[in-house]
Image (cartoon, rainbow, N blue to C red):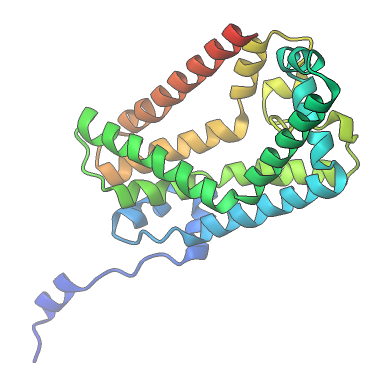
Length: 253
């Protein structure tokens, strides 16, 4: 007859379902990240959601804007790029426009690969930061899973951008680099605002900050460190990226 004490001590607590994890990210994020810490590191559901809504947005751009128009808009919102384009011979202008439109379309078509690479690289940086700078004990797999779930608020921005396009946004007004009114830059003109200020305003994005808060909570839990350490690691790297991008915009502008 088995010893009930030993049996209860070795019993493994079942993990949350994928649906529960998904819901808890928005209602009780600590439960999702604690589940990842407990060894349940599956990340396929948030990945599929990101890809599906990414392709819906891709379809909306294709049908409602067109990639040639999207490329023209991207160049128009960059005064320096537009000036360089105007100085080229007509045939070279057409060639550059085609290259830009194909590159943009190809980038969206490669959404699954781009998401995986971006999450892997960011997870690697955060894994090193939280473990070596803050004494954490997280594994790369835990950070990767946390990052996937923490990125779900970004899907809301993609959905909003898709809805806006289907509701009848003028194709000439579409900005592929800032397609939804979730940040301060959406209320500024990219052609009448200094590039550095516009870049900074665009970086202050509601969905991005929401994701970073979730990411800070998540990596703190799986790394077994204070939550403030998670926030410092996440927002510290965000500040570095923003400063570099704003500086580059100022330099190139």
